[in-house]
Image (cartoon, rainbow, N blue to C red; front, side, top):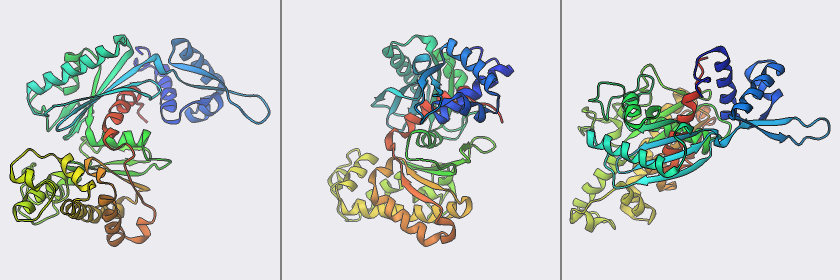
Length: 398
């Protein structure tokens, strides 16, 4: 990989070739030549060299009707591996992916409390090291680790402005020193969107809005097949739009943010309040006894047809759909993907969203926009983390 990272003209061409195979899978020399805008002899020369280095594999003849059968080339699965780390409020998920993009293994670490302190960093590092050791892979074959952080993240500078923001040096550099591997970081919602784009419900769509409704609320935007980051990497803070005159204090320090009414934390708050006011739920006893309650408990109760939980989830869906209609009017996307923890309530969330979108968005605009539930659901973050670990190694500036 050192030669590919050198920045020379040949290295950039090799990155473009690898990028083609990342996004399009196996292809013939002729198809690759058209995609990277290089002559067939030039592409052939590079492929021969990359096959010798082990990164590209000749997968044999492509079956065609008559004529010569061209060879198919693609990435060699075991030539390199990538590790993803998905940090969540109550769990840490680890994943290992091969060069071709196949998930090799995953591991969920619980209990885990994401906190803004050194003890949490120690736990992250020890678990990542143990996970890699358990894989038995040679260290030199693991060429990048990507860590998802649920906060405002500038992946280009390596800084997080939510968790671990007290560390002066870039987080990617700090983690790289602690782990002994190359490390990149990114925002969790962006990783989920990328995972869905590469391995989830996205088919041929190139203009997509991914909505992550979990404990908080955020979006990720894909324009013409590329992640939209914004100037500092902070694009997508949908949950902090001032949307309500409710005097509810958001964790960001402002009042009336959309997240205060449209999120898992809002759902949790409203359920507690409703039970204390006398309404009933299968979770009532646990709430009255002050037992620990998680968002997953509420989702489980919803899917078990708890009337109060269903009403509250549907209310969140109606409000979310109203504001998604604004996004549709602005961006005119081909696809809106609803993901995150609350998407596990299935139609209880999705149907109210669809109804509100039809009600509040322009019909001429929304007819172009499909709404789908995430196919990866709780796996979107870890799939995206691994996929980003790979793609970040081969980024080429246009």
